[in-house]
Length: 191
Image (cartoon, rainbow, N blue to C red; front, top):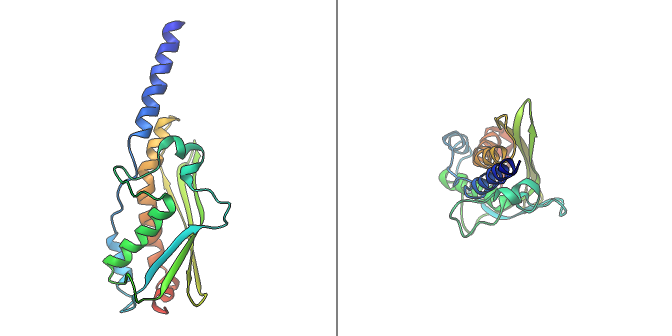
């Protein structure tokens, strides 16, 4: 019986250690997003603050699974949480698309309405992301996307690792799906 407990403790230690070591991959802009952003034209915008809305929405790093799973970019001392990651991803996409200006451009602020991970033993896992962008003139654009991925049959560290691995592609797909939207492109163009 004692050997069983030692084996179980060893598995938990390995699982938790494996869960905390890896981080979210650095963001890589998407070619598909670039294609759609090039349709916007010569408009240039700046990206301001990105917070959570409503104010009570906690960052995924502060709660449950992700505090144990260390949802952060590996080797990034400037990690500002998932909302900062989503904001910086937009900045990178706009920069690659030639639409970003650090200053002397209309500012777009953002608010994370939804940032959640769900796991279903039959259908796998999903990241749900919803963001509202607001321009200085009060115009808004809201976008949401669900990114589904396989979490595997096992629980614990396997789910944790796969959720972390899926966060970067979930954000890539989020901005790709936004860029495909004519409303998003019109929102950028009308600044």
